[in-house]
Image 1 (tube, rainbow, N blue to C red):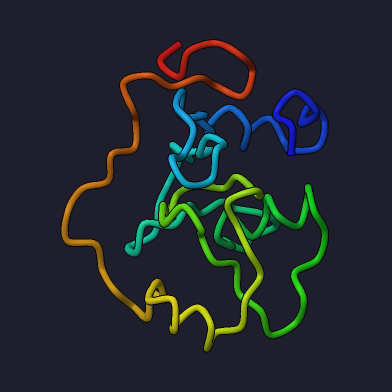
Image 2 (cartoon, helix red, strand yellow):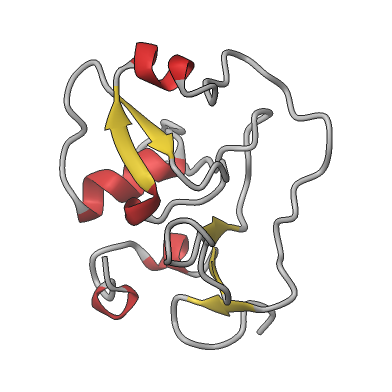
Amino acid sequence: VNISRLEGRLPPRITELICVAAEPHPKLGTACWLYQGRLNRNGYGRVSIHGREPVLHRVVWQLLIGMIPRGLLLDHLCETRHCCNPAHLEPVTPRENTRRGRAVLYQVLTRPLDRQPDACLSLEGGTGRD
C-alpha cells in the first residue's frame, strides 16, 4: 500500500498517530508504520471505534485491504507488534502463527517498546516529532 494513497482511506485520528520508520525493514524492504497511540499489554495498538477497542493492525487491514478471512489471524512479518503496515501483515491460521513462533498467547511485554525511532516520518509527510 502506497502511503501517498492513504488520504481519506484512514481516519485522521489514526493517521496522526502513525509514524513511518525512516528506514525500511531489512527483510521486507518497506518501512514499518509504528502506531504511537495506546497499546495493550502485549504491545498491540488499540483504537476506540463505536464503543469497542479492536487492535489497530486489524482495523487498518480492513480499511485498506478488506475483510480478514474468518478463522485467520494477521501475522506481523516484521515482528513489530505496533506496526500496522498492511504489507507487513499476512493472514494465517492460528496454528501457523504458533508454528512461526510469534503467537502472543497472553505474553506480557517485559521491556519497553521503542515507540519513537530517532528518524521517523508522519503519514502526512513531516517528521514524527512535529
